[in-house]
Length: 495
Image 1 (cartoon, rainbow, N blue to C red):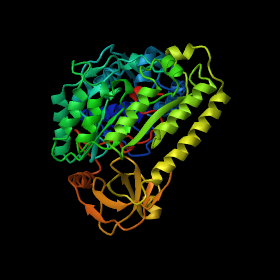
Image 2: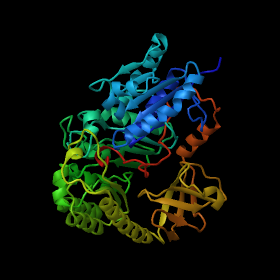
Image 3: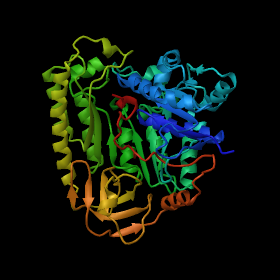
Image 4: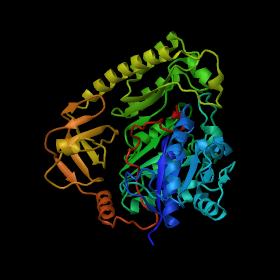
């Protein structure tokens, strides 16, 4: 009898992506195997890991559940589970609207999924279990990571902020920090398996320490990462400007394996709008952080998140956002039109901006940022950089005979495929010859190829049988760290 198959569908932020790695690890530990790519619901268990950030998040979920209903009717024993933020928020509503769902679980008890599936099978009725607080830190759960050379490492969960546009704190709870020793032990274990890049992950990653009473805990953690032998690249996402202190900047500048890259959400350049958002900084404070980072790390690439059309935003407010973008000169920006989140204060605020006005402002902002991104990328032409080869970053690599990877500052680089074999996780040295707004090209010959332990790890994984054993696998989702996502990037950058 063949093992049962599973499929996990993920929506939302990087925290959800990492949670899905754990859900996969749990299911494989329970004896399931991953369904082939493109199974499209043709699995014994289909798990939806949901996001509640967007106004139409529930419509997307119920539409997908509706498409699975006839498939489940034709497949006796098939089970459907719904977890994540929307499950935490809507609870019993999901089973009422989609009675063919077998399991509903929340953000605090993802470890219960295999038990709930078995209970639903035995009792032949839906199991809804939503914990009100974290039962165990998710990093203690088995994890089936999606890549062999880079990994998310969660350092905290939850959020203590009260931004009026964000529902995440209500669904993820107050911030809970991991012990530094536990974090470093996980990093060392990952590196021992071949991982060479890690991304520290939290809703407000640089608020780390507030739960354990150490205001400099995050900078100390960055410096501690610098002493992990074999760890080549350290990134983190997403920090909050409120908690971005000088000791963090110093740790970034003085720790060689902390990459010259910063993703810090702006949300708006208007002090009036920032106040309405309950963001505890103003334009001057934000630009002051940018100035300090650039003084300490001249080649740092800085990216951000911006909301256009927040309730009450005037044309003058929007011009302040454009001014901030011009001053900050972001390498890239995730720009979003404001979307109501039911259950947030902003959803019922007066002064909701008409859709056509929001759209027009959004287009102006996108055009400005496109221009700045291109100008900033052109400054990279002629630079010789080390690129960590990635898996699946370049959609046209096959037809152009190029490979793709990430520079230290996280810019996407497409480079000419060298004669020597290179694997994801290996590092190549190239000279940038051309810049586009969203990527760089290195069209000349590769000047050096460094085979790495990370490349060895990738090779071992891909040489293994297609039917992989259950257990903990290592790596980062192929979307990158932090690569552009179809949804916001998580935590304080949730839009």
